[in-house]
Image 1 (spheres, rainbow, N blue to C red):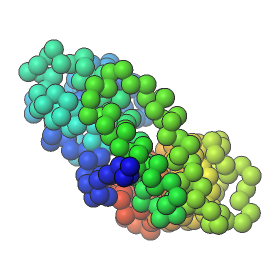
Image 2: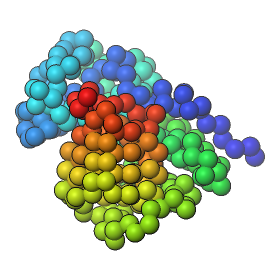
Image 3: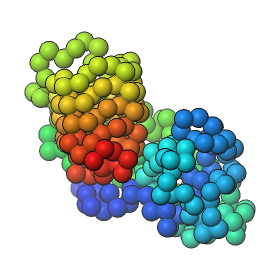
Length: 278
């Protein structure tokens, strides 16, 4: 049996790129947020944000951070919003079709989670070193992509993630083999609590930092090439001058949640956030 067909890199990234113009403000309604450093107001799930316009656009989109909505700036639906609106409900929206509200809102976190997994699988497929598992990666990509085309209501997202995690770990190990820096600190490991850690200028090449807490860590000038950052919490981490050009499984929300500057090196698939130092 021939291996499953996976879209090209360009087509994959287009599928997973959020396009608010083709959505119906789903993230501005379906999701709840609480007044905090990330959100200026409380908003229950299912209530439209006060800044959501009649055209489903955000009235303060160009000034989210100054207005206290850093969390909105960081959020990325990975294209789940337009997938639900354009495909699942065939172009309809929750205002003109209120009978669709509950299903659309419940689908958003599920489709977003599946699309995030597609992002990771696509990144793994782009790793030449992961060639020995490319067939399995392609199969997993095809299966999860098919899930997003149907009714996601009964999907156990945790179960889907658990099924993919070992495969992504194998791809990571293959990509990092022989690239680990010498003398990595023992605390620099998967799931480590590195909140506020002073890691400026450290050679962290090939480190396994999956799920690590790097909140407000000083990673300025650090070498993070081929470091596995899947699920790492980079909120307010200092990435100024750091080299993440070949970091594994780095996502746009992680980058946007961190601090950086013009000298920070990022993978070509990610954009330099507007709030970073120039």
